[in-house]
Length: 210
Ligand code: AMP
Image 1 (cartoon, rainbow, N blue to C red):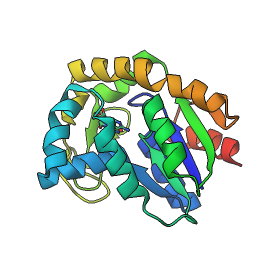
Image 2: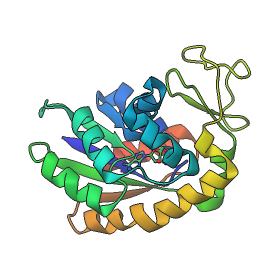
Image 3: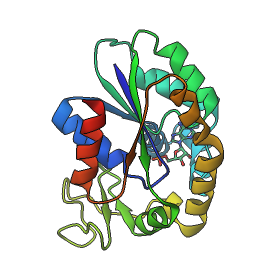
Image 4: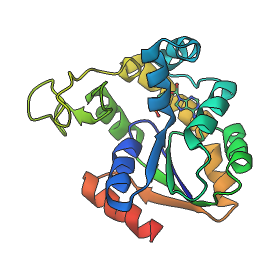
C-alpha cells in the first residue's frame, strides 16, 4: 500500500513522514534524499541533478522514472510512504502504472501558507548525514550547528537560499498543485492544515489515515 504526502517545500512532509515511519512502520521514500545521495556519490545522475536542484527546478521525469522504480523495488506487500513524488501530472500517471500491485491508499496534502513556508525554509538547517532537519529559532538543535540525532554538522541546503525558495514555491504552484485535482477525481485526496506544532499536524495526519 502507498501513501503519498504532497505539499509545497517547507510544508513538513519529511518530518511527518519520519513520524509515520517511527509510529506506523512505513518505509519512507524521499526522491529529494535519493537525488542528494546521487550527488554525494558523484554519479552521472547526481551531476545532472545538482545544478537543477540548486536553482529550485524539477529534475527531469526520465531521471525520476529510474529513481522511483529503483526506490520502490519489488516488495509489493510493504507499506510505503512517498515524500516528494509525484511532483507533476506526468509523474502521477507514471506512478499509476508502476505501482499497480500496490494501491494508493491516500494522497495527503499538507496545506501551509506561503509566508509561513518562507519563514520555515529560510531558517532551516539540515543534517547531510541523516537528513534530519532543524530551524534556527523554531526548532533549534541542542548544540548549535550539530545534529541531535547523529552529531553531523548542520548546513543550509543550497536550494534553501532566498532565490531558490521563490523558484521552488513557483514550481510547486505551477507543476505540483495540479496533481491535487488528479487525485481528488480518484476519491483518495485528503487535505490537512500543516501549520502548528509537529505533533498536532501528526494527529491530523493520523486522523485522515485512520
Ligand atoms: P525535496 O528534498 O523533496 O525538497 O527535493 C529537493 C529537490 O529535488 C527538488 O527541488 C527537485 O529539484 C528535486 N526533486 C525531488 N523530487 C523530485 C521529483 N519527484 N521530480 C523532480 N524533481 C524532484
